[in-house]
Amino acid sequence: MKNILITGGAGFIGSNLALALIAKGHKITILDNLSPQIHGDNPEQTSPLYKSIKDEVIFLNGTVTSREDWEKAIKNQNIIVHFAAETGTGQSMYCIEKYTEVNIQGTAIMLDILANQKHNVEKVVIASSRSIYGEGKYIHPKFGVVYPKHRIEKDMLSGDFEVKYEDDSILELVATCEESKIHPSSVYGITKQNQEQMIMTVCPTIGIAPVAFRYQNVYGPGQSLSNPYTGILSIFSTQIRNNNGIQIFEDGKETRDFVFIDDVVAATVLGIEKEEANGEVFNVGTGIPTDVLTVANSLKKAYDIEVPITISGRFRLGDIRHNYADLRKISKLLGFEPKVFFEEGIGRFTSWVLEQEIQKDTLSESLEEMKKKGLLK
Image (cartoon, one colour):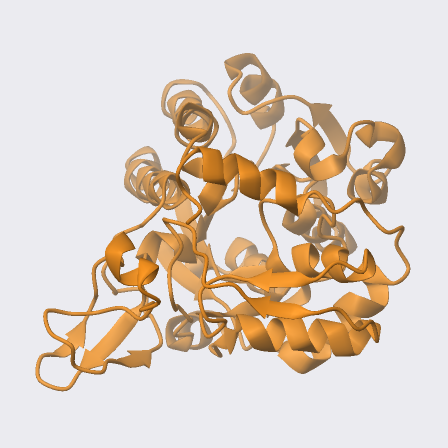
């Protein structure tokens, strides 16, 4: 049995991980500030995620930007799983100070304490992100493996959304491995890259084993249905259940690797418990790209609600076109294989959604905010 601290442990991934670790006999402490954007305005009474773990863990209501909160949380811990972060690529492009303070400075405070004070921590697991890769990995007919630069506004305004590399050759999308080029296209991605690099660099010098997981697009029962800034499945679900039409950005052919929450938890538990994970960085996904139009149509079918789907041609600066995970490393070292693929996962997710109250659709307000900041075109 280990004493394990999960920062952000009342969140979607953190709460599910906490319950899985408790079932295996570990003692869990959670440090979380119960952010209203995720948990609502009265989280201690209304947040399902918080209520699912509050009686099972030692809960500390605090923030990773506070050294005092960190010192309380780290006391007597053997392992730290660092999930607490501001998330969302679009919002990160204008809430720059906030994302930097929470994600980078919060991680720096933790490492400073571990480097300079007595503790029992033997391993730190960091939630990294596929966003650090920026655009994915491609095969060029002449140059072989290439990593295209971020798309430019002029091309996208003309309806040309595909990535390019030096000429107009057609590129073949392939899975992104852990050795792929890191070139994030958003402030969020930059902060996750920074978090990962700090953990992987500092921890070995102070006798702590680091592990980093680059999660793809995580979904499943329990994720916030009211946060308009993250989670395309939640956003679309809330629109559909409010009988509002769905506006799909770009041409609907942009793809993501959607990984079910149970698989994410299973991979993370392996990273916590297996020594083979120590000092390593792993992708976590399904290894299968799914386009956004398929997501929208799958949700409509599952809810049996007919709403119009519009391919708007609009786009957000900072969004990537394609990225899906190469899972060979995590399969070889940790024995991880995803078990829940998109068709089954959508069914399990939508069954849960139908049991929840219909949330207010606030997407238009968030899009208007991005438009005012010059990020939505």
